[in-house]
Amino acid sequence: MRSRRFFRAEDEDDDPVSSLVNLFDLAMVLAVGLMVALVTHFQVPEFLTQENVTFVKNPGKEDMEIILKQGKKITKYKGTQGAGSGKGRRVGAAYELENGDIIYVPE
Image 1 (cartoon, rainbow, N blue to C red):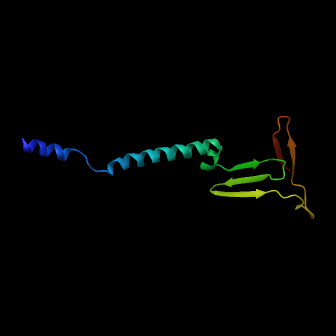
Image 2: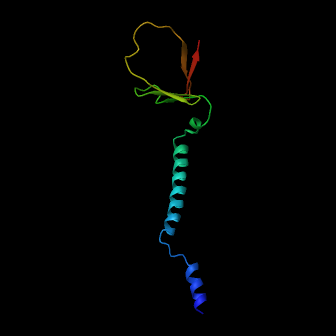
Image 3: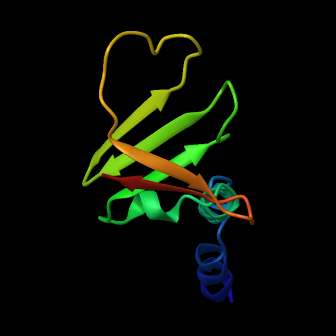
């Protein structure tokens, strides 16, 4: 009878650290879910592809920003008021449609 009790004691898991493994797995699942939610909320899955993409944040306002993604390089331009002085040449025209979209047409 003692040998049976001895084997039962070995089969039981008395390691207090084993429950932390389950907490780590739970934390990893929550972290991945949070990352997916953030990517879909900010609508930036285009940044994860190899396509060239241009974003315009706050068009026509003082804090307007243009974000260009070309391959793996991302460039961010901020608009400043009054900075455009000097001589230059016309490079295109911008048109605002009825629905509020702005289209740039290079010459």
